[in-house]
Amino acid sequence: MSIKPPSRVSRIPRSITLHTHYKAHEWSMWLLYYSPVILRNILPKQYFDHWMHLVKGISLLSKKSVEVYECDQAQEYFNSFSENILALYGDKQQTYNVHQLLHFPFFAKLYGPLQKFSMFPFENYNMTVSKYVKGSQYVTTQIAKRYLREIQLRFANTKGMASALFSKSSSNLTPTDFNGFLFQHEITSSRLSVETLNVLIGDSIQVKSSTFFSKLRTPYRKLFCSKHYTLSKKRNSYCALLMDNRVIVIDVFVCNTIDNVTKMYAVGKVHELQICFPSVTHILKSRQSYFACIECKDLKDVMLLVVDENDFYFCSFLNDVENYAS
Image (tube, rainbow, N blue to C red; front, side, top):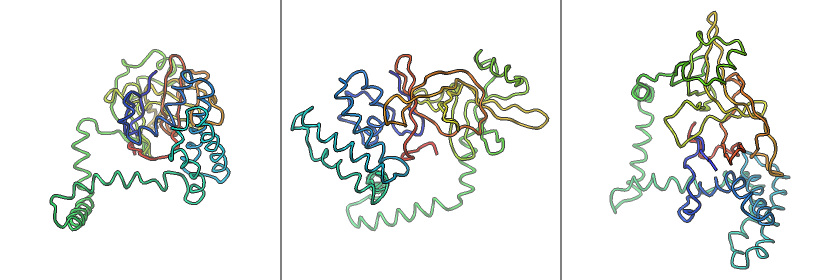
């Protein structure tokens, strides 16, 4: 089993033996993305189906927007999950938290998806606020003054500060801009795989007139990497959802310039997907794959890849909570 989340995910997965130390975000990733793939061949069918009722219910209420009928579907899943806790796990697991699930759909109808009325942003900001306090007296005044000072610094000379930071961080890795597509980390053609070279030749893309990169930020602020981007070995941001709902595992980015016209491509293995868990649409399994050349404008969003032996599962993110890459 291999799980390398993209850079937009704040924490890489830890062993389930450390579950007592999990943060809320780790539990969220485990519930919505990791557990269906991991547990499908571990739990008996009755227990796995029961667990998937919780996954389906939370998934429906965690989308960017929620319809009333989806709230009703989630209610059915939570009812089934709560009713079967006693039979499967005993009365000690019939806790107050399990009962609370039954009220989630009602509040989702009132306020929208769960993340819209979550307390996590406030809890996360407590750490920032605590750093404003340097003494035991006039605590509220300390917080107010240091917060206002931070806001003033943040917006003072913003352009000059941003320019200085950019020039310092980029050094010799200054992005190459093609119509708003920012390419970075140029690589040589000698590092390209045989499959990639065959695709370029088949699509009549001249290697000599092309420049190759391992990192891309699109005009709509989506960050993608290729397999050649090795600075983050525990991350995988090279799986991209395409506009036609296929997925490409990016091997390299190609900028081909002919007669002052530049075309931009992502080359890699394209996967066609199929549903693997009934009523779960954000986790799909690869049914066939092939190498292809895709225009960069067709890259839609980064995806999470979970590999189980020879099976590839691609997970699309339900919302933009903790999107650290943007």
